[in-house]
Amino acid sequence: MYLSFLIFQDMSSKVTKIGVLTSGGDSPGMNAAIRAVVRTGLYYGLEVYGITRGYQGLIEDDIIKMNGRSVANIIQRGGTILKTARCMEFMEQEGRQKAYDNLKKRGIDGLVIIGGDGSFRGANKFSSEFDIPCIGLAGTIDKDISGTDFTIGFDTAVNTAVEAIDKIRDTMDAHDRVFVIEVMGRDAGYIALHSGIATGAENILIPERKTDINSIIKSLKEKERRKKMVNLIVVAEGDDFGGADQVSRVLKENLPKAEIRVCILGHIQRGGAPSCLDRIIASRMGYHAVESLLQGRHNVFVGIQDNKMNYIPLEQAVKTKGKISDEWLDIVKILAS
Ligand code: F6P
Image 1 (cartoon, rainbow, N blue to C red):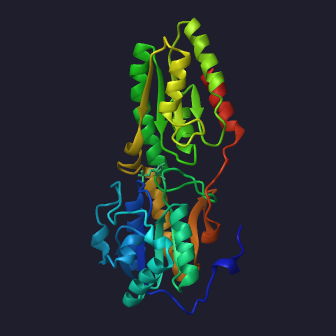
Image 2: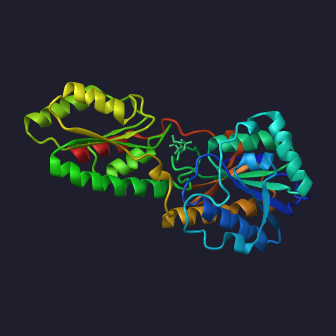
């Protein structure tokens, strides 16, 4: 719970024109969030502007006025109609000055940023330098932001991973093989953990825990002795031991007779139609972002915790590190035995 004086500003300076942008890696549901911001803004009589390619478009003045039709028929589409980018120039004061000048020129006095913790840190720096209130919406497939139970895109990404892993399991089982499947998650193991549990993986390797490769080798040798060589290993790309290629290389060295295959799911996890849950989360967050700007609640990002909206100061936007409880890993161990 954060003190309200930290995040409420002068109510007399009400916003009239707002901009919305998507920043960093895209995630399914970003379009639903854009739609919610635009339609809520228009409902309250605001002018709403779409900024293309994240902060890059802000710097390059690539800004378009949106209307209700601009966001028609997008709630079900993956990607982002506004496009996205990771913008280095915005990390420099000169870049942020250009961005501010472009907003000022149009009279845009509020900004909604849909992205991850890096994008929020950029917004925080920007709003501390210039008088533009910013509201973030947590959009990343990795679910690696503190203070929210959900991020836009995570549910869809996990379901995509589950669908793919189920298919791999069929062929793995038919051939009695070991599969090492790499899923996304540079700093967080949530996609690996959720998709691994949901597909009955024997081992799940995540950045939040030190990987004990020797115990995996030991259990595979035991399986080899019993001639039961089916084993699914789901590894997050950011695991401390390395990705799927590294894991499989070491397993092959130690189990030369085993048939070990690797599959890296990659960007397939970032695309596709958003799940129902992601559309709902995005719609709720988008609506509350505009409400927040109108109420004078500034420089926070919108999360959802215990099914309630949670407003976290942008300056506290940090990655969830090591937050996975042992209970989850016990479930993996017990259910795979
Ligand atoms: O942050 C989301 C994410 O999908 C990570 O899981 C992954 O490491 C990264 O983005 C990939 O980024 P890019 O598309 O820029 O290669």
